[in-house]
Length: 274
Image (cartoon, rainbow, N blue to C red):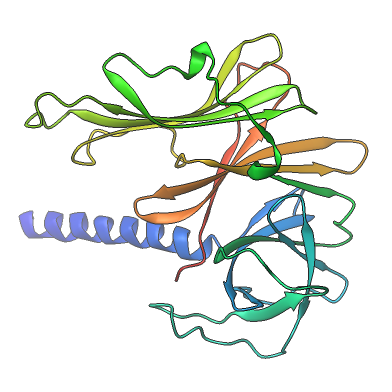
């Protein structure tokens, strides 16, 4: 009986681990507006963009690269057969795309790609570096007691008349022997025109990576804002560059301009690293 219980216990552990691993492997894209627009992670190889599509988009679908600043660069497929990137530890098929016009000047290796039918008019992308940066922090952006600021990002959107912030603070460790010592806290939020603050996501961790608290999706610096509109309805999503258990990617947080008691929707897209 004891042995049977052990077998059942380890089988459950294995099943849970398998589900978690498949969640990361299978989370290849995020869909929005009833699958009208899908976002994929992608990586750069020279002037080519490698995208891990299971199946390439249909001929009537657009493939747009969310570039730096406010650019949405149209991509075209360069070859019919996928390639297996040799530099990846566990390579998987990637389809090769390139910009329709011009060359890529951004040295970053990771990108977001949007795919869908007629989405050029539906999608607007505003990267963080295009927004006005304010160095002053509001009252809601002050660290907790005994914490000191180690990172602060305040982005002011004139169009939305709203400030978005990312705060990273570290505990002034006095006794490093304490196992439950909290060493870092990350907060992402927004300051409304009337001055009220709303925390959109946060995470705390101790010096040993234990006793973590906060939102399920990871927290990190702000990458930009995605706006999806068909003229009748509008969605805005704040995009963070974040990591979950050493798996890097992008966290999408729904932005509601009107105050709400409900938690904002949050979704995580793993980076393209097999």
